[in-house]
View 1 (spheres, helix red, strand yellow):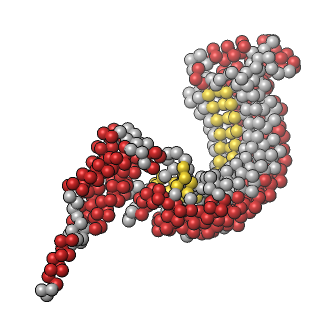
View 2 (view 1 turned 120 degrees about the horizontal axis):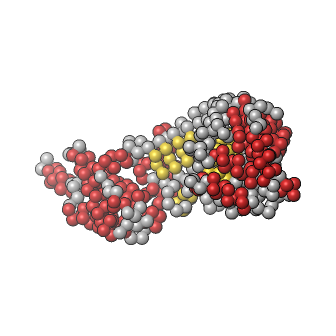
View 3 (view 1 turned 90 degrees about the horizontal axis):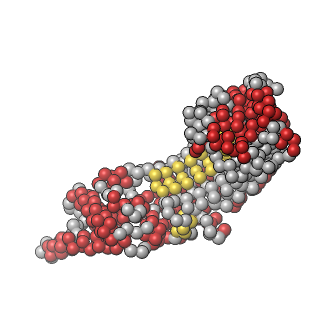
Length: 540
């Protein structure tokens, strides 16, 4: 016993690690002040504070961290205090990073105890703010520290706009694996930018393995130039998802082969509500693969396959598959090479959709025949349609009666875009009449449609006094100088509602147009009067 007593006494003396001395606490405050106000890897990214701000916040951070650590120590009075020291250091690091993220001028906002408590219960973890930059291992350790906090409540992660190297991925992998069961939404868009292909694929594979078996409802892998290799690098993650509701693969180099890989690796789509493939090089065969996915998505509400180089064959496949997506609310197929045949086939699918609120069909080479069949289908379907875009489709006045009848039936319409067509005054006047009973409409774009004074005036008079109206765009047309003055006079009480007219060409158009245009006010008024008397509710 006598031999053990000195040993026991020595242990008692050497293990008292808490509380730190006042001098130690002051030194920590000074160090944090320096870290907040001088150039470091974090101040370069988020901005530094003034020395006075930094000093004030360093004191608040230290006091808050000390209070938490001291409370922790009091719960284990017989302990050696090491866990309290560790908590003290972690809290200081976490709060310093939060101060930097708030940026210069944060002194006006302050840090209070309630903010520390709310940080523990925070559900959204986001490192995407600030400048786009590479992340290596050391910075990853610091940035991802909050995810290692025991009992954290994070369910949503956003790693976008940060390029992970292999070292950073090895740091992130175990952390993600430790919290994957609590995650619901993960955004990994644009997270390997600028990395060599081999390294990027390794990084993707590490993240995929780490998150395998998670129960995500939303996954965003956009802006990663995936291609087939990238899609397969995420294979373990994709194959393990059973309740996914949203999947984003935009600007990902989704080729024909990559689209087939997606079709293969995403077996469970029964709950998918959002599927977006914007800006890829999918092509016809890739669209056929995507159409197979659509056939397995009975609950789909939002589908985007815009700017994907899809032609007639792929467009037909997509259209046929979309016919089975009866819950669709938003459809975006802009900027593809569909043509008339697809327009007709798409109209058959649209006739089955009663929940559509937004339809984007610009730049699809629909021409009059395609536009007419689609307008006729939408007239009978989609009673809640709020947005309709059919710009750049070579639509002429021939399709105007069908378009006007469709528009007249859509009382919930908020936005209409028919720009870059050849609708001319004859069509514009009919569309103006169709809009007369639409009190919710906010924006009309009839720019670049070979309009003259009569067509532009008709739109202006119909729209100017609508309570919620925001913008009329008739730029890029052939309106005379007198017509421009008349438009400005109509909108004199609401000049902000009339878009710019700097690209208007009063001398443009062909001779036939001029004969019915501004050179003859009588002919113009006669045309306007005749067309406004048409019943747009009657089908041609």
